Image (cartoon, rainbow, N blue to C red; front, side, top):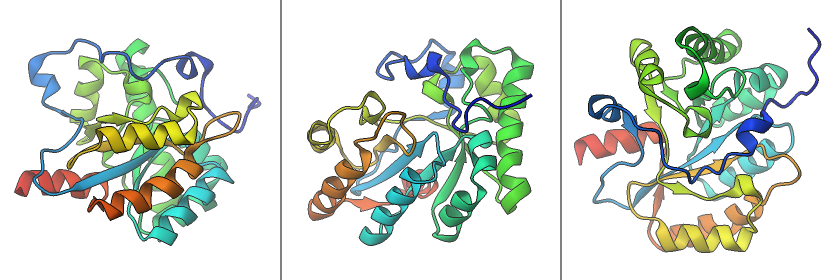
Length: 234
């Protein structure tokens, strides 16, 4: 079947406001989801969803390199297959790669078999090209339920959401993103950004202001895995 677009981001999820409450799940399952990590240290994790994108991702990579900071990219498998060279640049630069499903599917609205296929295909897209095994899973839109948690657990994935939503996906002006983050961030937070947003992105401009200012305030930038490990040992 011919592909209509090189960028996989269904309109149904674009229309979601990611500030909605997460769906009700069992108390036991809730323990499997990482939103932030308790930490006495001022460590935070920058995360980027929905890429790779041939220009925007590269611009973000360059900003991160210029500032010498770590980050985690949650890849859409189909986009990774369209632009493997971008994924290679991310991996070679030392950034952490996570699974954002194959097609940016709403896993909460999918049956269990579809959930499994989305996770497995997203993982295979990275492994087959780079022999990089993703171990972090972020469900698109934060849409999850007990079945998604079950599928992640069976595959030894850590489910990662976020504690600070920059709302860059809503084309929030960069100065508003900066104000929001600086007013709300604290040690152990996971920040949600995107390295693909249709119709223009405020993210690079916001990052150019945020990263130096957060550094000035004493924050250290680490990958999600490093943040989780820090929380365990802290």
